[in-house]
Amino acid sequence: MKLLLFSGVLLLPAMGLFMLPYSGKFARHFIENDCYNHGAWIFDRITDNPTPIDMAFIGSSHTIHAFQEKSIEALLPEKLNIVNLGYCRFGRNLEYLFVKELLAHKKPRLIVIEVHEDEEKNSHDIFPFLAGTTDLLYTPTLVNRDYISDLFNGASARLEQLKATYIFHKRYPEPDLNPYGYGESDRVAADDELAKNEKAWRERLSRSQTPFLDELQLRFPLRYLDKTISLVRKENIQIIFVYLPEFGSKLKKPLRYEHYQASGPVLLPPDSILASRKNWMDATHFNDAGAKKISDWISCELYSVLAKNKNAQK
Image (cartoon, rainbow, N blue to C red):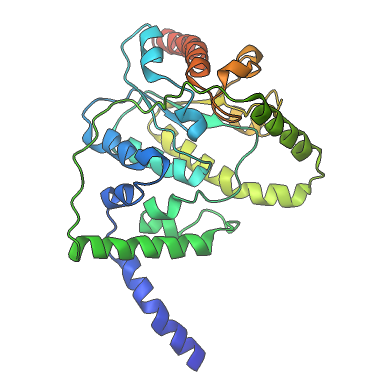
């Protein structure tokens, strides 16, 4: 009884933190030292920037360094406002938050979601700092290995908000109204970087798997992906998936290909782009030359999608 009472006293302050309103603007600026301050830019692009969003790319840093919005806009037959909303590292729950925020403020016609070789089974490490209290507390599946740490980090962020609001009276910078999120880099990966990653993938794919455990852990990311798809479908917005593998994995299509295909087309980049060493900034990201080729390629794919949609509406 004493132990329970003591634990309850410790939990009361944390419970109080979760009962207070949590500012999305604070959250995005709180993580300013992560991913080129892309969190604050995404928030500004969605909420403060009046430029419409007709097409959005959602994904990881693979997306940031793959899709050049200006190039794609120039190649499409009609004037569309395209935005690259990629964010560093993998985590379907973070993508869910971004899509939820996007649909609350903008009305895109098309959303392109990145897929890679396999699903990341952990929570995104930035998720607890950006999630509202409901999204933080109620996980869609019990298979969440990071639930306790997410709660701790979410409570810490809310404590920092109290300090920033009432002690330091923190002011936010003016909104960044740059409409584009593509990350430029003219670096060309060294041969030893690419060879090392190729070897790592051979070793990874040769390891024996435990199918039951693998499928159990997959419930977490796939449930969040399905929640994201459900949000988009409610708004009658088309979904397309695009495969962005790493150099050297040599997987022609993602392992969960059928799951994605059940919800929308899965675009597979040509081997000629993926296999050229000159197209890579490092073993996992395209450089400017590679991104230009990927952007040109997906522009043709999107041209076909838009043309089919236009014909279907006639």
